[in-house]
Length: 125
View 1 (cartoon, rainbow, N blue to C red):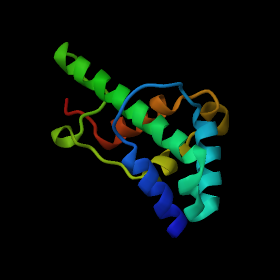
View 2 (cartoon, helix red, strand yellow):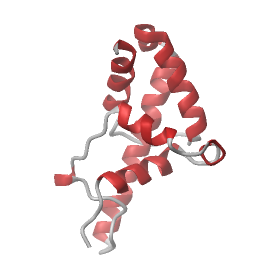
View 3 (cartoon, helix red, strand yellow):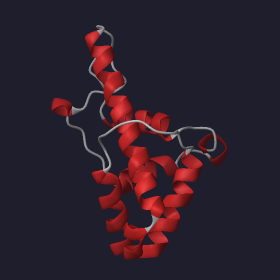
């Protein structure tokens, strides 16, 4: 339970800033599993910041895409309530784990996150 809380705090805090290198979902999950195994010590691991930054950057890019689509009169990929959707790390990891390994190896975190957000916050027709 405590291990899950640490990763939840790390990833939930990370949903919001901007850009770096893309990471495949398979690598993200490997690093997340290793962090969960470390428990509270995960807070001091370099991968903690790396995963947080990855989710933060992907979230910021997706938000910018969504706002640009709206401004252009196009339908965005997802529509969070009042522009404030939330996810916790357990939900994020559970969704990422449903991606078959062969696909996860070539799917960027941003793309997997977009798919999750589109399912969780669909836009009205």
